Image 1 (tube, protein in one colour):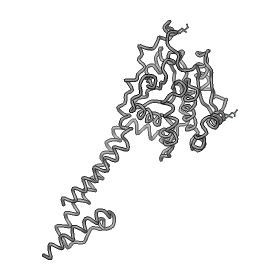
Image 2 (tube, protein in one colour; image 1 turned 180 degrees about the vertical axis):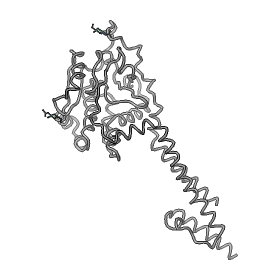
Image 3 (cartoon, rainbow, N blue to C red; image 1 turned 120 degrees about the vertical axis):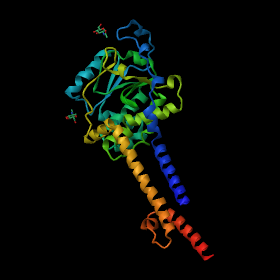
Image 4 (cartoon, rainbow, N blue to C red; image 1 turned 90 degrees about the vertical axis):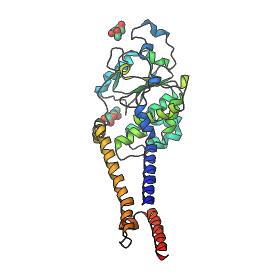
Length: 335
Ligand SMILES: *[C@@H]1O[C@H](CO)[C@@H](O)[C@H](O)[C@H]1NC(C)=O
Ligand SMILES: *[C@@H]1O[C@H](CO)[C@@H](O)[C@H](O)[C@H]1NC(C)=O
């Protein structure tokens, strides 16, 4: 009986330990606010302020966007044009599928196999933005983001990304100087994170998308970057919805599929999902307890009763121990 309880507790601790260890970064992401790296609204000059010209300009004046080809669909032409119009002194680079592939082949040939092998085109669109920011520096903007004011004040930070609620960061608007260590880490991690998950949405999110970048961000910050290596965080109010915000958001997410609805539903009802998870977990634990401890107990009460099939065939580790116990009992009987 005691041995059964010990084994049960050990197995439980091992399983729980493994589960917590494997989602540790994700758990950390839930509490990472990014506040300590926030771009404070007070440090940003107002859209028409004369303080604008005094801010340092570290990030090169380049705007990067991506699309399949040069024919931008109608609904994204206005946001695209708003960014071009507000930034007359900037170079504008549209990364089409063809240009992206040529760029990777020329500058980062070690990545070409992974790049070509991605099952979903959006993964290439995700990956290319990290590479062009690493190589050229500049500001990447999703085509569904329009510009509300000049991005000049954001050139003052060596690297910045946008905070998303409730957790993590997004990859839809980001800026950096060339060769910034954060984007170096991002492009360096892409190959390791290139895994397929049961749902396309999760595969995209976790291999190249915002979840991937958020996890890289967590790991990067754990190393305690200082000064110019820090990644500064643009918070939602500075991102859009206000007259002083930098962007306007337009309908997008063209790649979303039906599995996304499931994920969004899970996200919306996360409390329910968590409770359900706990219920399932405890039920499994209870069943295990019953098999490991209670049936063992029953068996030692009645030595003549046949062994449960479960103990003989399903759990070899446990069977070995239970056999040893019965040898001990037999010996004692003989004495
Ligand atoms: C800044 O000035 C421009 C033109 O001078 C004007 O159109 C715009 O509304 C102003 N922005 C704000 C937030 O005041
Ligand atoms: C660009 O891509 C779109 C979407 O796949 C396609 O409908 C269009 O014909 C393409 N345009 C050119 C010029 O290839």
